[in-house]
Image (tube, rainbow, N blue to C red; front, top):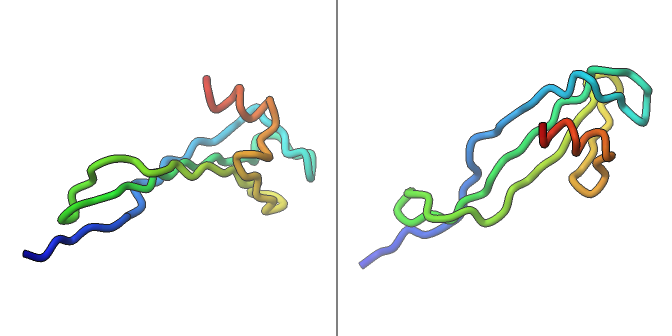
Length: 80
């Protein structure tokens, strides 16, 4: 019997952080946060989430903020 087991990225969820300013360029309302889960699957059926990749990007200066670089302002906006 052959088992098809592996990992696969899930659907990207994006959220515009309209009241957050970029700490690199100072522009307000240009930050977009992205969350994408990675799933373990068996026969292409997702079983459970392995991890969740989170990052934010400024559309003005293209600076990328990874989860550990999020400012408290970004964390508050994401939890709201």
